[in-house]
Image (cartoon, rainbow, N blue to C red; front, side, top):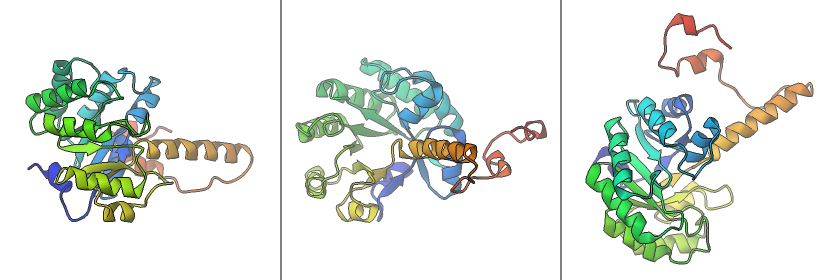
Length: 259
């Protein structure tokens, strides 16, 4: 079992914050988060591209290249693998592993379950040690119908963990945990859903934040800008220029006088 896989079977569930660039990932790691994921929405929005449209393959790989050799374990949100061809998805996963990523998140988008299962199997063939977190969008895009059938298919295809974003009902979460047995269940944290301690008690083994941190940061920036324009002091805390500079790999003094 890899170090990252072991975090899904530890005494406490893996709490996985999601970054969208080098600075956000480095800042989270500096706060003691052993593992960091990426958020496809944050990566796409930062590049001015649509999320969930297989438009950010290159941006995602570049980010993995920048982060994969960091001091933390990196799991990459790869949408649906940026292709409907399982072999191409497997090759992308191999490239992620080659630059240091230890996990990949693959979403089915409510497409054919067998096609998604084939992608999972291709990833496990191309990069056997890469932790595949197989996501079904039955609650994210639908009413939950077919969740167990899809997860069973993904488990049989070799998924290391299963992800059901949008599922917040405690009874349904507990029931799904029992159904999956030893396979870890990942739940997307929701401010209106169960708390982290409650999710832990329900048996959830991985709790991720998705795009929440990116959206919170964007909201804070907008609030600060409008407060300053209106003559008010901005609320909240902001890292100093020097604090952000130390998050960079670049130490050349020529790059330390910007704004």
